[in-house]
Image (cartoon, rainbow, N blue to C red; front, side):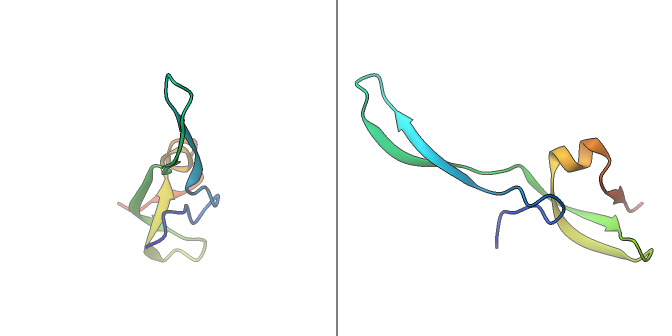
Length: 64
């Protein structure tokens, strides 16, 4: 299962944990992806994975 928003494409990013002694270990940040039911352009209801910033900004229409 990919953790990627189907609207904006936001997904997982990677970087480093940096300790006080400046040691670097790899880590990752997951996007806040929610499985929601939306109404698409044709009026059909389907279940998609959407990030919370797309939900808050109103880029998708939630199904009732």
